[in-house]
Length: 121
Image (cartoon, rainbow, N blue to C red; front, side):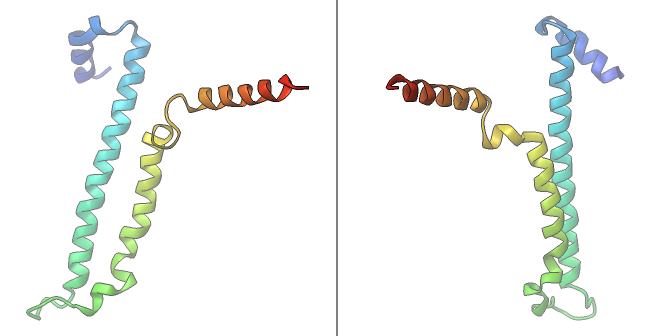
């Protein structure tokens, strides 16, 4: 473990029942932090790309309004956004769409249907 992780573990060791829980929680927090870093870089870089794309002619006094509605101005942000969305789903994935105990609820629902269906036969 690195110095930061050792210091954090020693400070909060009494709160964790075992080392595996700590490692799993640390790994999840690291993945969330990496996603937010990716999001920050995405925003900064794409704002700069769009800004410079609209201001290609630095000699002029205003930006290009005709480029405002062109696909090429926003294509990088669009395709990178798809990658960012995939990264977000990999980090927050099943909690966002299906919830923590969706499988258990669905299994129980199917079992209840089967029980009621066989009840009258």
